[in-house]
Length: 316
Image (spheres, rainbow, N blue to C red):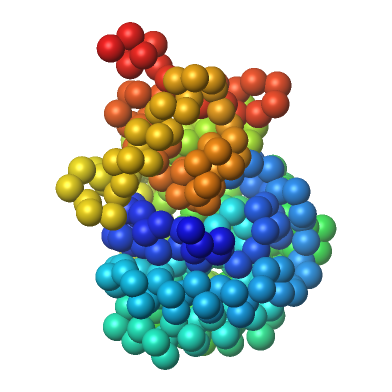
């Protein structure tokens, strides 16, 4: 078992993706209310070597020697990957050892105002930052950022990176009804996107329960209306997770292990990761599939979000 790699797992956007996690759980520059990995416990803008990068490189070397190539190697995890001060070295290592495997970085984009961060990501093929709000009030409501982050600095950093990066730059906007879907907020977002000039805008909405209980997903009609509003900017609406059946890297044994575990008692995401010895991001992929199949459901309790077997499944 690896400590800093997870998967490969089927991704909605990247096919079969091997994950690389470079920061401890929930170390981030934002504390987004929709995050399916829970609340940020270390809200920071300080870049440092949060986990031993030399160990990450050893794990990647072992993976390359013993496994088929994935479609993508993706830097994500349950925190902000660009907080790791040595992320550029890891990207360069992958590029040198696996030049034919695509590299993606999923980032909230808040550190792209720093030249050293932009330079570190130049080895990537695809960078997918996010921008959910262009006003201070919506940014605070949705993303609850570190105090040093302003909409102006955030947008300026994204625009600077877009100007320098030669790979594919896709900007994700997470739509939360009542928070960033008003005409005023959408107009501000569109103006920001025009300044940033990404290759594509990807509209997303709630797919899994977030940090707070009273948020909801935007319906398809709302998502399409917003997509139309952003034209002529290229926009796509993120589709539901792909079917996992027939995907060789999708582990039926893990799915069964999750169901067997929560049949005994409801568990949080962190409980399942600890019990089953897997990364929270990997467990999250399976939870999404099991929810789609109607086998499990999420229930919010005092200690957090718990997953339990649905009655119709447990009665089978």
